[in-house]
Length: 171
Ligand SMILES: Cc1cc2nc3c(=O)[nH]c(=O)nc-3n(C[C@H](O)[C@H](O)[C@H](O)COP(=O)(O)O)c2cc1C
Image: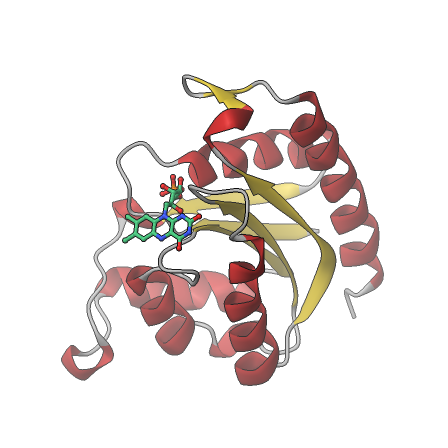
C-alpha cells in the first residue's frame, strides 16, 4: 500500500507536522510505503495564476497514491488557505480514495473544524474517510515531542485501522 501523508501546515513550528512524522514512523513500522510531503517546501499559488511546477508534481503524486493522510492546523474553525488551494487544484486524482485526518489546534473545543476538510474531500472528491481523527493541542507536547500517552495510543490505533481498511479498499 502506498500512502501519501500531506502535511498542510505553513507554520514554522507546526504541531500537525510532528503528528504526521509520528504517523509516518508508525505506518513504516507496519510495512506501509509512505511519502511525506510538507507543503512548507512547495510553491503554491491561487488557481487564477495557474499551477506551479510543485503543484503539478503534487497532482501526479496524488494520482498515483493509494490513499492519503492529511495533516491540518485549525484556522478560524476551518482549514488554512494553502490546503484549500491544493484541495481545489491538485486533488482530482484523489477521487474515490480513502483518507484520514490529523489535526492540531490551539484549543480543546475546535475538534469539529475537521468537518470542513471532511466536507470538501467527500463532497468535492467523493473520498471515504477513516472515522477516527488524531486531534492534538499544545498540552499533548513537551517542546516538539508528543508526550501524551493518550495521543500516542490513538496514533497506534489510527495507523492500524488505516492500514487494514486502506488495504481492503485497494481495487
Ligand atoms: C490564523 C489562525 C487561526 C486560528 N484559529 C484557531 C481556531 O479557530 N481554533 C483553534 O483551536 N485554534 C486556532 N488557531 C491555533 C492553531 O490551530 C494552532 O496554532 C495549531 O497548532 C496550528 O497547527 P500547526 O501547529 O500544525 O500549524 C489559529 C491559528 C492561526 C494562526
